[in-house]
Image 1 (cartoon, rainbow, N blue to C red):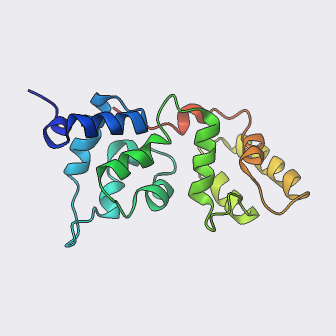
Image 2 (cartoon, rainbow, N blue to C red):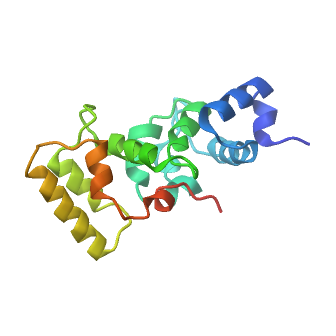
Length: 171
């Protein structure tokens, strides 16, 4: 008896998706089961509200932005897992931070404005003290330039344990 994903996807497709995303076959099966169970609109598109209910997405601190920037509108299972792959455990922190930047980069220039940075900082899992420290660092950088890149963001968040808190959780 095989997995749900292996019943609906060819071995080649599963292998390709695994190679693209780094998810194990067990994780792909788990995600496939959840994805297939999601409600869809009359055009067979997965509803945004349903994507927010998938456990690893729902438990992510930036779930709404993740869905809006990378998962919705859904273009199928492969698109879904590609979006999630940016935040899996083992993904290097600099790549996660770059992905977080893309979630808040509304104009697609690879940079964040002061307002975008502030919106991001308040959504990060941080204590009040950590948030004050990040705001202080942000204001130091903003005194010298108008927009921030991934390196600046890494400096602002230095010392925070974002490696784990930005990772998808599977229970």
